[in-house]
Image (cartoon, rainbow over all chains, first blue to last red; front, side, top):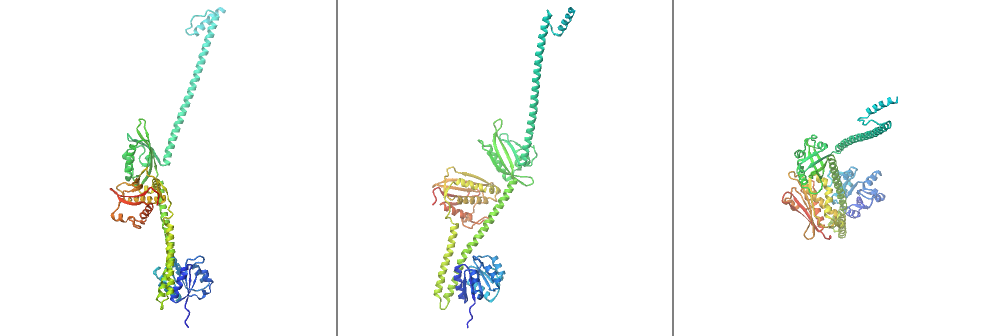
Length: 136
Length: 444
């Protein structure tokens, strides 16, 4: 029996991201679910099965970092890769220090996405802290 | 008995009447004479009393006058003391200058401002020895203008003193022409030491421009970040879709329907990015420029008032020659003033290293052929080399340290928006002249 592919959850309020990113991730071979808000993801049954969370930083209502804190509070250990259109290295650094696997600046390359998601699923933490930010 | 008494009386009366004349013929006659003399004495006495009263009154008037005079003297001394104190407190001195005799009289406070011994004779040389070397020519100019003065217009000027300890004093002077007793031209002037005020203003100006710079930089930073965010969102979609599309096409067999779907999404996201740019253009574009009737002369005067202290600080002397028959132009007053401000600042910056000649800035307006109005800004600065002449109006080209290279390219686009043109020409002497001309008629 073929093992089920890892499940990647995409949480972003931007519709074009929810449309495009799952398609590319499926091309990589992952199972994907997309959510338009942090609240929607928290309420879903997929929460416990998610292997990697691709999480937008700035969203109306609960923000990406808010969701990350909430997951920590609930002891849900889901590796998080942040994605943001706001290129701010200070924020990136803080997110990595708070335990994110990576923080990608939109638009990010296919390669950078793949490396980050694979690292998250393998359970590596914050490997890219060692790399200078923005070298994608 | 009676017989004996009478002669004695006669003798007595005779002796009491000086130059007494004919002896009285009878007792009656004698009594009459006595009464007459008594009357005379009474009259004389009354006269004397009257005179005495008059003298006393005159004396009292005199005493009053003396007292009044003393009080007037006191008042004068007091008001002189008050004036001196007022001059000291307000750091204001006064002087008079008789143009014909070149005789100059200073108040005590003016000696103190110049830090010269009170009472020493004031000569032009002595004044010049204190005036800042860079302002000597200004003082000479003022003196010449004052000599040639016709009519009763006054003068107002600002200059600096360079004290022996190398400190600088800023003075503000106002002079009014008058005539002396012989009808010769004389100036009465007040000179105020405005050093403290000037330094405070400079500090204020400096922090104000620093604040403006920080505000500009931070708002520019915030603006850039939000533009970047808005554009990065659709770009992100395009990049992701393009990756997906390539993978779908590279699959065996290729997923053509999927690739078509992602390509359509790319087109949509590309349009979205273009929309963001269009919104930005609407926000910063010229669509909402105000069209009104603008008097270029008053626009120029307002800008000069705005930068007067900045120019003064840069020791720039402004001369304006504004044509009376200019007529209004149609356009956006604020935009035109931004251009004027920019040209004045450039002229001032171009002269900031000039020490061997006056930093003269001339602003002229006139009518030119084709029903156009022209403004020119002439400086005595570093001038234009061929390389900068060619690139002057390019965006982000600058010859100034700390310059953004935005001013002239924005100025040119504003002037072109008014169907005019902006150009730069080197002067015959040092410096350059920037001028724009715009049509008087209505704006397209």
